[in-house]
Length: 222
Image 1 (cartoon, rainbow, N blue to C red):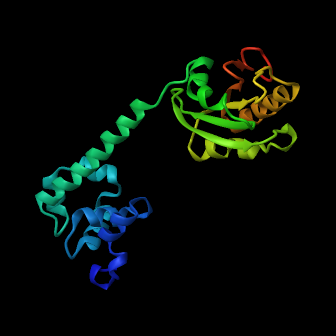
Image 2 (image 1 turned 180 degrees about the vertical axis):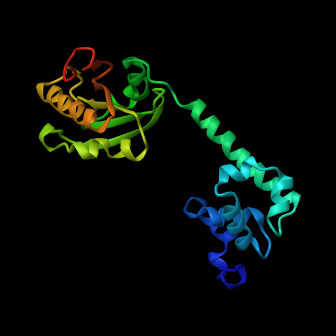
């Protein structure tokens, strides 16, 4: 749809200003391009180049030559914005902590989880280089291994394309000694991970100032 047909609140610049994460690629490109033909130009850019990666790979001269209504200044602005996005993604990757041993896991959660008054089960997601992707709070309150749904354990790992997960839960009593239920739950989740091709790397129990790795103790891992 052409710009002048859109209500003010639905125009790309307004949409990007109010909710950038809710905008589609056409809207983001249109806000960057500007001008009365911004939507048509954004559509032409994606149609001609096929992807943002290909737009970034083109020169400002090439973009200005093949896309009607785009000068070298606007083309340079496009390339600049895409390069800034690439550098931001690189910075974020470099900031991700690496999980190489159980102590690394404990260092990330110990302070908070050792002070919890209720039991919580969390799932730590890691990528192929063992870098942290996210930590998901899955259950809060008394944990019964019989009601834990395997699909919920792996749901975010699948969505975020994690290669491995780490289970973490706390014992509000302060004693991190794993229970038979802890070992049984771990065993079931490890087996499910094999079917999904997602490694269950460890399961930590957090106590008060102490932690236990079920993998180090050979509980639930074969």
